[in-house]
Length: 494
Image 1 (cartoon, one colour):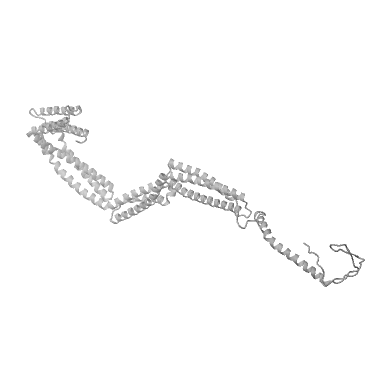
Image 2: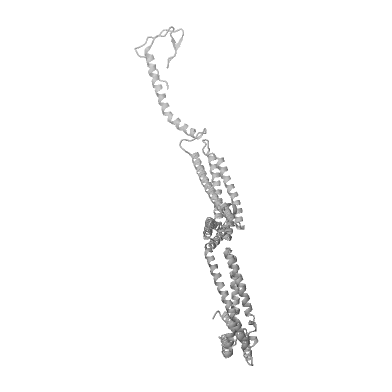
């Protein structure tokens, strides 16, 4: 505010004369006339005026310093809130940005987890399809493809949400950050739901996957066993040939396995796991058989040599025994009726023919042995054995017939008691624990008793048929034995 006028210093001033140019206004009084002419120099009043202006300038400086903090306080919120600039010290917008970024990180983690699980599951599906082609396996593949479409949809939603919101730009508004958080959270939740479906689907693959992994675990060892079997068979064949044995048939069998080894080397990716496993097992079996025969070949050759010698010796012995059949037949004709020896009268001729055929087959077997045709030699020796067995039985039958007829002629009662004892023993077993026998057991035994009585009746007369009597008693004992076996079977082996 203006300062009041002060009295001039330096003593009283003389009254000025009238001025023509104008008047000077004096505060508190009438206007005075201003003197004309140049003004008189008055230094004292000028110094007084400067002293009056200094206090006013100082007051303005003080007022400016006091008002600066207030203006700054009013200007700072406006600077942070408006104009598109980011706040320096945080606020609601930065909180929304942080929440959106957290939602983005969570969605990225869910996406990565789902993608990893899908890749792992795809390996399991490929394992199953490589081994199993059943309807269940094909159904699993179709379900996985459908689940893959669900995964693609959820992943697409996540990628769209990430591309639609740039959380790093400076001009991000709070509302945009909130929308980003909502979209990313929804994408994360969808990824989580699909992950749950994926886990449930994976748990259902347990049986099929276990079976497939078991077969895959068998694949490499099976192929390696096949290779080792082929190598061992080849080595055994080389050793047999080194001992002087040809083994051409074994070499041909081993060569036939070469294409199978080629297919094994081509791998299961080309031929399939089940087929490769089956082929490997087949190669192993056949190679093992070739190896066993090759290793046994020297022993087999020695065995054939022993059998040749043994069968030749037996054929010579049968030739000697066949010459003794004629005297036995002569005694049978002399002492017993024709029914007792008539079926034996051709034994000498049959024995001689059988021995002759056996000797011819022995020669063929010897030639096959020299040519190392082992299967042929073995088959011929089997034929020789069968011929000699038949001859031995025919030659032995004549002597055995004479012995039995002599025994029954001397004491027929012993044969009768032996047969009756067998029938009575069967009858006691049939009545054990029962008041009446089972008709299935009683009827054959009753018929056997009647049959024995008829056989005994044939012994009466001048020339009884002892051979018919012996065959009848033998048949009765066989019937009794059959009834006993039936009863024990029905009673649980008692």
